[in-house]
Image (tube, rainbow, N blue to C red):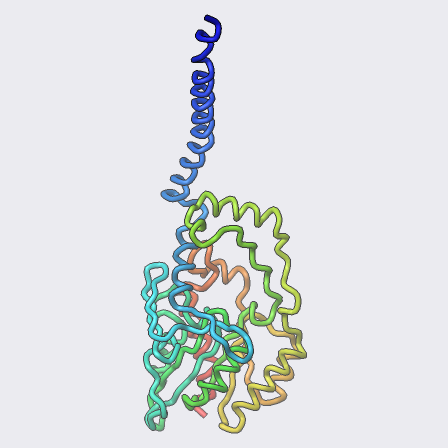
Length: 321
């Protein structure tokens, strides 16, 4: 009797244990599910914008072998979208309409070098300051009858070195009359250490996990700066020497469009070797007032308009000579 009576006890205990485990799992997963729904629909951490930015980067940028290292280049013919703006990359790897080579006789050509700022990260096709500069130049017709053309050679992720490689390999073939080089803080200052990526590409779509990743980054990363990524005044002077060596034989003026406030020694050296320095330092207050979104520091349309006006002041005296 005792054995027969005790036979159903084990299954009942297993059912109770299974029920407890199910309740525990629900108690754990339900808050996570609510958190995920909140992050998906309310998104206080701007994860949607981050995902949009990552998709856009993967569409328009690629790493290529160039001068012994993997460097960023725009993808020829790519079409991407960021913040609702469609971006077209030409077959020449430029955010620009096709550039005619050799240069037509009736064209006076300005080439703008730089990174994501002249590229126009986060703004529409007609908004980057090189495009606005071309519009402003139309109000200053040339005595020789040539029309102005501004080529936007800005590429996200480029520094002084990559811009120099492009100028040597491709830019000089465009026969520029003036080169304007937009230099921003991360071209010369030490780079912040990138946050550690704990999640694979698939898991990064789960915003709750990305939230934990972001918190872990803040607690453990100790951000700081990557060693050997900054340029001192001597290194900047060496870079300017290389630009002058490239452009002097063609008689092309090179304008340092300085938004960061380069070291005085580097500026003095640039001027001593015949380069043109234009001081247009962008303060942190200016950057915050004009950034394209609250989590993306790149300038919006109004900021690009101001940069275009300053670029006009930098290049017009050289173009009118």
